[in-house]
Image (tube, rainbow, N blue to C red; front, side, top):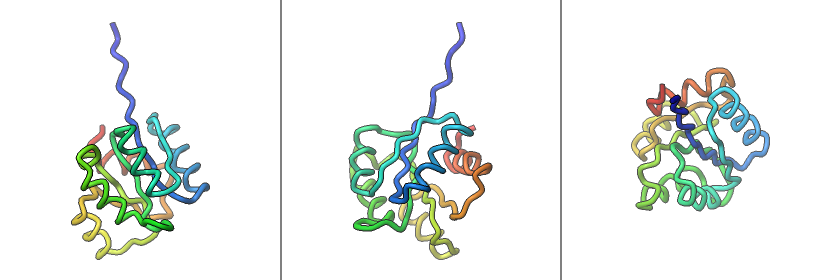
Length: 129
């Protein structure tokens, strides 16, 4: 009997429709992962609690609540605090990278990113081989 590999479930939180489509397509097509999209940090917090994804990919710059505030709320919630979070951001410098790590993010990927290397980069941060 063959055992079907368990598909990873990823929640992507970003307010930009173009980025939602590009990232979702990359992760599904190249990673074979299930991808749910949240259009705001507030929606992302609700979906994270409902879906209990294997990982969250989080934009930093969003209206109303930014990615940093969203991560802080995820870490305060017992139902979501253990979900690994990776920032996908145009705000990229060495200081930010250390700050994201100190906040509890497992990694950060700069925008613009290479669509062909996005899945391997995410998998590396998460230890998914």
